[in-house]
Length: 328
Image (cartoon, rainbow, N blue to C red; front, side, top):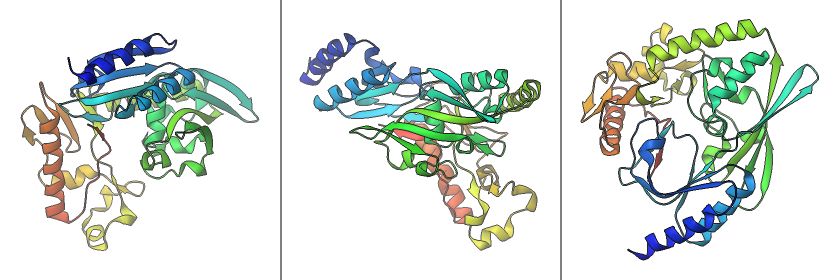
């Protein structure tokens, strides 16, 4: 047994004795990603409260282990070799509600499953999250990537975000989060770890919210069946205003929606539909959907992504940018 394994086992035993921590050694990360892909983590540490998370963060840092913080794994591509260090998950999922004039302030832990939050707010008649039904993952990751769908993003309802900056817990208001299309300050500075967020929601008819959410979920489930091993859309859509004028001039007007151009249009024109390497498949009905059709590997998944990027770059001289994040 090598020294690294011995030190990880000793550290795992130490951390397992702390309340609020679950520690697993050599846990396959394929069990914790939507793609069902990824080798083992040296240690997979799940913290259920802030003191436990900060203790684990400090202990693994002092032990000299490489570290990465993940959420629910819905948007991750993990290397086939896994991650040779500590993979930490902040799973605190508490929720509090506070009336605030004509709105309600909802504060929730970053580890809360986003769908759970959508369902709760819809049932309470609180408007703001209903269009995000069916988006997998946890609240913290949704804020990290400014998740959204059907013309809305979570940034529209974020009031404040509490995070750990490596030295202290701090709070950013909405402007401080530097939200942009599928971007935030936390994505630019990955050492700033989201702990909780306060959302500002308005009162609305629960039946109407339920209908909106139900209709959207039906569409999403047709496009991304719940059993499909995928991360939803692989590439960000393009902002029309940021595309070169020559590309803007060739776009059919119907393709531009709410100032965005679907990456799927470029991928389809470039012949991306149906592309397959090993068990990694591009859907034949949606060129921006890649899924694991069996025993796919990260190696093949990355190869498909790189090939698609090259096809679009060669055809249109524009660069696709992934929504997915890489580990290892």
